[in-house]
Length: 628
Image (cartoon, rainbow, N blue to C red; front, side, top):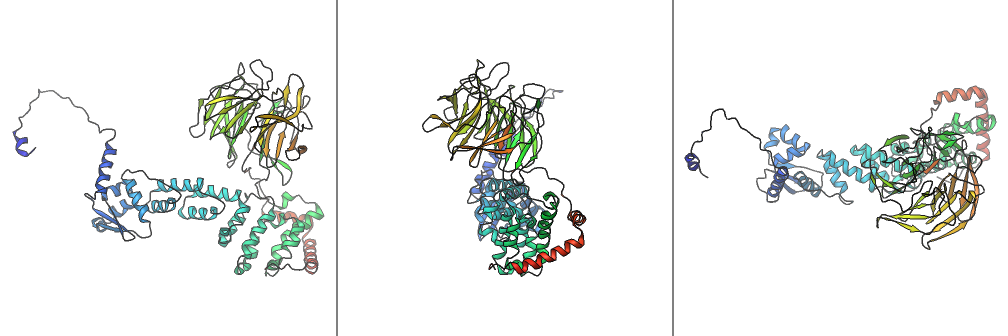
C-alpha cells in the first residue's frame, strides 16, 4: 500500500462521548517467533553488524542481541563508544566452537553439554559472564564426572573459576576417597599449599593416622627438593595419633626426617604424647584431635528405652570403640520405616511418645548433621516399611485403624507424595529389602492380625506386585538385609514359637529359601543391615528385655559373633549405613591450653629431661632407614 492509497482513504467519524478501548497483547509464542526470526537472520548473515574473531575464525552476530543476552558484550558495547562503533571484536584464549554454540544459545537454540565439551563451554561461559550456564556445567562436572584419578584436578579447576559450591562437593569426594587418591599421579603434582591443606583436613576417611603419614611421605619423596619441607608437611600430620611402634620405626628412623635441621621439633611433641600417655595414662582426647570421620558409618535412630520413646541418634566410632551422639530426631518415634539415599536418611511414620500414629517424615542430611521435616504422607502409618528405588522413597503398608496395603511414593526433588501401586496383602511389622531393581516385602501381620510368611515384590518395569515363594516361618517384627545377591531375614515373632532366633536366606536365582546359622539370642523389632562383609542385628526385644548388643553374622563362615554394646538397650530402633558422617565438633583445647595442662601434670623440668633421654637413647639404638 503506497501513500496515495492511504491518503485516499475516507475520514471516519465516531459519535461524541464514545470512549471504547482495549489492549492487544502479544501472542504467547511471540518472543520465540522473534528469536527464531533472528536466528534465521544469523544463519543467513542478514543484518549482522558485528563479527567476533576467535582463532582467526569469524562468528557474525547482531550487537543488539549480544548486548541483551550477555553481560560481557553489554559492557563492551555500551561502555566504550569507540568499541561500540567497531564491526569487529577480537577475543583471545577461547574455544571457537564453544563461543559459537553460546552465541546460538543467546538466539534461543538449545545447548547440549557433554563430557567432551563441558570444560570449554564452562570456561567460555565464565568469560562471557553467563554464570547460570557455567554453574550448570560445574554441577554437571562435580555430580557426574569426578573419579579418583581426576578429583584433585577438578577441584582446582572449579576453585580457580570460583564455583565453590561444586568445588566443595568435590572436596567431600576427595575426603571420602583420600587413601586411593593419594596413590594417583595427581597427588604427587600438588603444590606445597595444596597438599598441606589436604593433609590438615579433619574429615579425611582413614582407618588410622598412619595412612595420612604415608601419603605425606610419598609426596615428599617424589622430589628431592621437597625434603626441606619435611617439618612443615609433617606439621599437618597428627604424629601423636600414630601407633607408638610405627612412630619409632617409620618416623624416628626415617633418614629424610632425621637429616632435617628441625628433626627434634618434628618428633618432640609426638614423643611427649606417647611418653606422658604411657606413664600417666593421660586421656587421648586431652592431647589429640583425631580425624572426625569414623570408619564404621552406622547410625542407630530412635526406638524404645524402657518405656520411653526416643529421639536419640548415635553413631559408632570403631577407632575408640565408643558411641557418639549426633543430631537428634525432631520428634521421638519408634516403629517407623527407614531408608537411605546416599547421604540422606529418611524416617517415615511410626508412633511418638504419646502413642500417636504419625504421617510425618524426617530427613537427616549427613553432611550438615541436621534433621528437617519434609512433606507428610497422606496416611498415618504405624510399623510401615520404607525403601529407596530409582531415587524415590516407597513407604509400604503399616497400620492405621486397620492393617494397610497401600503404598505412597515420595519424590525428594518435588517434595511431594503420590499414591503407589497397592500391595497384594495388607501388612504391618513387615521387613523390606531392595535387590536387583525390585522391592521385596516379607512377613508382617496381615489383615487377620496374625504373622504371615508371605512374600511379594514390586516390579517398577511391570508396575505391579508379584507373589514370591513364602518364607519357612511366619514372622512379625523381623529384619532384613541384602548381601552377596541374597536376602537374609533375621528373627521376629510368630504365634507358634513366639520370639525367634532363626535366620533364613532367599536366593532370587533359584527362587528358594534356605536356613542359615541361627542367632545366639532371640530378636524381634531389631534393626538389621549389612556392612562390608557382615550382617548386623542391632537392639531389639528378646521376649523379656530390650537388647543392648549388636550381633554380627559372617555369611562366609556361617557363624555369629557378639559385636559392640549399645549405649543402652533399645527396641524398635532404625539403623542405616551411610557413606560418611560429620558429627558436631567438640571443643578442642587450644595448643597453649593443652601445653599448660601437660606441664601441670608432668612438670616442665621433668619433661625436658625425659625427652632428652629418650632422644639420645633412641638415636643410638635405632639405625636410620634407607629411604631417601
